[in-house]
Length: 498
Image 1: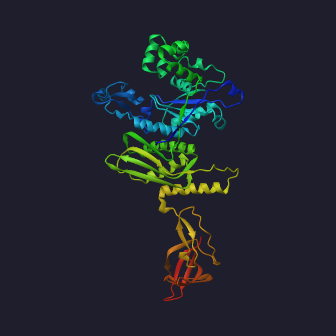
Image 2: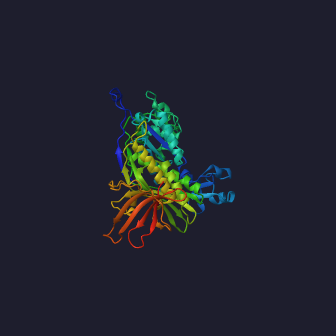
Image 3: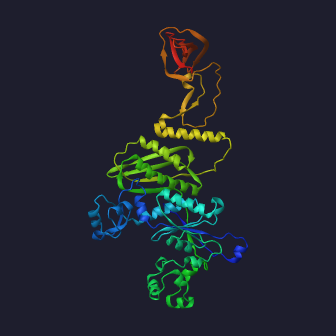
């Protein structure tokens, strides 16, 4: 899911800006310390032993492993051959930088619902930077916003460390040491950053070695160095880094732009056949789609969910909505109905979700007592669920057609189709249940009311000439019957009244 990026300068907040009431920037950093493992496991509903491996040939080693794998004796750095000797049931996934980059962009698109400025940090570990100072008035105080972001990430299958500070670099460093306490206005930023270890600063290797030889071990130690002496001995890199973290100089960041279409994939480390497991994996993709649509302020009319198989063509399920929507719970309910009626040709090895056309979504109007529009939307949701369970062809709407022949005054249409009203000149009662083919009567019925004569259709070769009456059967049912005016002049039942 590619997207353009724009450079957004991050300027330091000055006392003059604060005195004028200018909004102070506040950054929330998200660091994903177990990103490779979470990508491999987020599609699994059960706790199976899974490990991410890296390397080539005989040098393949365990890069990360989940709790179930550690319980079997697997550890990070273990050769793959030794890991298989310890746990033959271990599922392994090779680390894929392209897959991780695509997953990070997917989270960035989802995170745009919380902030208008999201920046990628494509590092190890990877992460995101969100400017949330402008979001507090919309989402409440900082702690509830951070809790909602953390809970949303957990639903997607990710665990993140949070850091919150006035500068993006300071927020990132606090997240690296798992210090999620926000830096409050007036609090000394330098003091909060002092415990950050030297190897978290991301400096050049030569600079780190030179600092270690000088006995420098943390951010606080670096601050105590002479600026002029440090710049003369080590170059301006360290001084510029400290100034960026403390907000003394601008720290430009690339703003992530949400793409026009949604395409995300989810690989499964093991073959899956159970519908519950597939729904679990699909739910995480649908939640990601929901956040993407909220960020785009849009909705969709259709989406495609695909299932990959080994040595078999992929299975595709297309879900269409009567009205544009984006609610993940509703989409999952429709998918559940479709999955129950879909025969998968082979076990599933991966999923993808695609939504090509994103429409502008108007904010929903609320009404204390429930408006007619809200009732109509509830009816549309019911129709969508019925179509997902029974099939589109089994759930149809009806619309009127101008004419006099009873079997030709209506036709099927898509549910919810707005057709022009048909003015009827028929004054006689008509039954709700009309038989597809009139049934002959053996004996003349006892008539209750009538007569209605219908003669029509001479122009298309299917003309009729009938006299219609209302009668009752032996069990008391009211029938709509007619007698032919031509030929044998037989009697027929054409419908039943309720």
